[in-house]
Image (tube, rainbow, N blue to C red; front, side, top):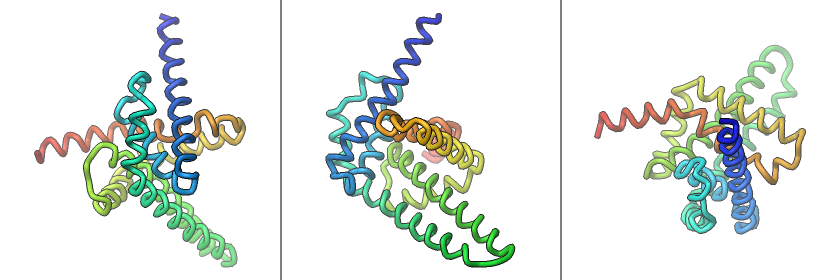
Length: 204
């Protein structure tokens, strides 16, 4: 019993490490600037397809996925970065405002940044599950994030914890941070995905 539990634990750790190394490899293939977006999308797609079946997660499949997702992954990623940059700039400007309005505006801007980041995670998951146009993908991701506040909190808190632990243990940047974020987003939205599948079956 203990041996089986340890084996399962080591398999999960190996999948996390393997996917994170894939992320860095593919990011470097895109010279970081053009590689991070499609690399994140590739890691997400590999885990959605195989979960913890580590033998099925191969470099060959990852490379095919990276090339296929190169343009789309960059569009989604840089749309997020642009939005976060605009919100962060407005947050910087709002510091100059006095009174309660300052707190209200800051709260709204911080929430909008969290919402944008979670919507990005939803867009990666949706794009891994369904064949959908980019415009409809972003709309569906936005609506999906809005439709379940509990999932939004779970993803936001989970990612915050992962980033905090990474700050304490910098080695995770190389061996776990980015894959753990994708895996946590997948896990936190399990009930939402089941609901989506049921609705699609009803309308099929």
